Image (cartoon, rainbow, N blue to C red):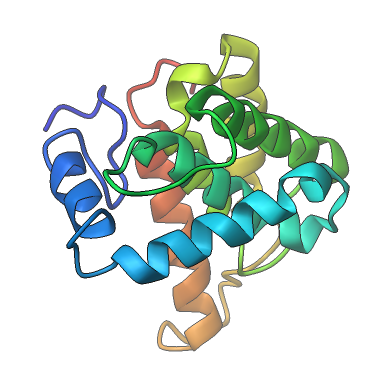
Amino acid sequence: MPLVSHPRLHVTSTNLAAVKARLGTGGVWEPDFQTWVDWADGQYATALSESLANLIFLAADYAFLYMTHGVTGASYGHTQAQYGTLARDILIEISVQSSVVGNYDWYGVPLAYDWCHPLLSGGDKTTLVTLMKTIDDFDLDPPTASAFDSQVTVGRCQALLSALAFADDGVD
């Protein structure tokens, strides 16, 4: 898979149909997916007013709905474009509220960046890549820490996930 294609994190253009089949009618995740869609629709109106800690997860939630929209048998409260716009707006709000990756749970940012990539402007991408690159600035991986420390490992995984999200996008 060429790195220039999106999505590329967990879901790709080659396995997207299979993921949607698992989420849809008769799929192994069908009941849970519809419950989750209903939950996300219930959060939609107030999502942008959530705390920064919640925004990080909501960005990925709505980007996933944008990417997988149109699952057979699923009932949605919003259009694919609306989910994608909200995911993009949440990503930008995250960058407004924080100039550094501030904890170990920021994996939603690179996922959302990847999954709603077509909706991001050049300026959006630059802003978000700059933010994702700050993971090392926050000292999540101090040089004196054991390589086997769980938090160091999570910090390194986030750095790698972020790098994979924007690799070869021409932003960095």
